[in-house]
Image (cartoon, rainbow, N blue to C red):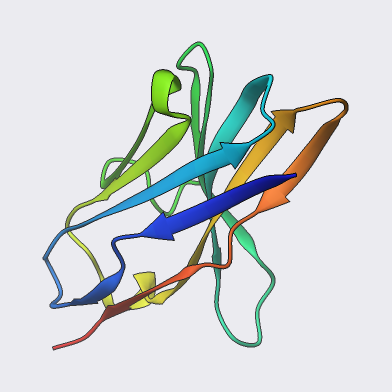
Length: 118
């Protein structure tokens, strides 16, 4: 099995910054894609950003230019640097990974709360 453990959420004022981290552990052969989604009550889970093992990134338009996704392949860890945070960035940020073990499956973390408030 694979576990994803997030850290780094919290309360921040508009215009501030936060950095999220997510480490994957378990019987991992390779982590194909890692990234972040956001969940807001009453809305569907939405893509924030993903990054492949070769460093190819993909961002939702809402976060381009403000958020940066990166990963440390040696540590199976993905990061999300969030700058210029807005009130509407508030939500639960969930780590996501496509991991090869004996099979290839999608995994989700439990999420970390990010609250942007003045």
